[in-house]
Structures are given as structure tokens and as C-alpha cells.
Length: 150
Image (cartoon, rainbow, N blue to C red; front, side, top):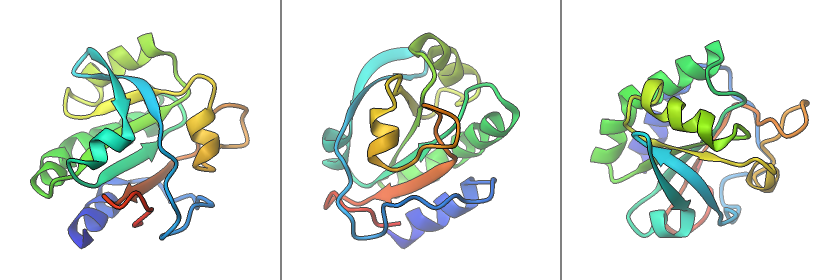
């Protein structure tokens, strides 16, 4: 788990924002329409946790400069996360059609991105920004026990 945390720190290039969910807190379970390599599927956090920890990162807006840099960094680090048994998923308020393109172009077909158009998951993780419905740049590692590890 310490290596997963180190990789999250290395992959996140922006200054961190601080979520209300602290280590040890129960992670809200969720499902979201998502894309991986341009292929649609329903991301289910509880199902993903059965395979290993999940690196959950929230981002404000696909195809903006900061989010593109961040997605590229996570794409480069995804093989290292996978070697540690961790799954990476990004969540934003973007519509599903935008995320389909983003998954191919900026996530480089390496990790999933999910759409949260009603911002329910963003709110559940206290990952909202000052702009309505938009996420802050916040990352968490959810351990297989369903708790925030980092």
C-alpha cells in the first residue's frame, strides 16, 4: 500500500487539495458510467476493490491544460499501479461523450474515467470545487477494506 501512495504522490502534479474524507474514513461506494480505451462500461467501486486498492482521482474538466497534464501523468504511472494490484479511475462532471474521447486521447487507453453529471460522487467524497458541479483536483487511495488509506 505504501508504494501505491508513493505513486499517487508522484503522479499528481498539481498542488493537492484537501478532501474532508480523511484516512480511515469509510469510502462511499458508487457506480458511474465510464470509458476505458474508448469502450463504455459501468465502473463499480465495490467490484474494483475486490481486485485490489483503487486510486480515485477527481478532476475539474477534461481537455483543460491542468487536467490533461494530470491524465498524462496517471497514464504513465498506470503500469506501476497495476503491478501493485491497484486500479486507477478518474471522475469528473464532464458528460460521457467528452470522457469517451478523453479516455482515448489523454488517458492514453490506460485507465478508466467516469462521468458524474449530477456530482453525487463528487459531493460524497467532498471533492467539490467553488464552481457548481465541478470537482477539485483531489486524489484518494481506497484500500480493499473500503476505507480511505490516503
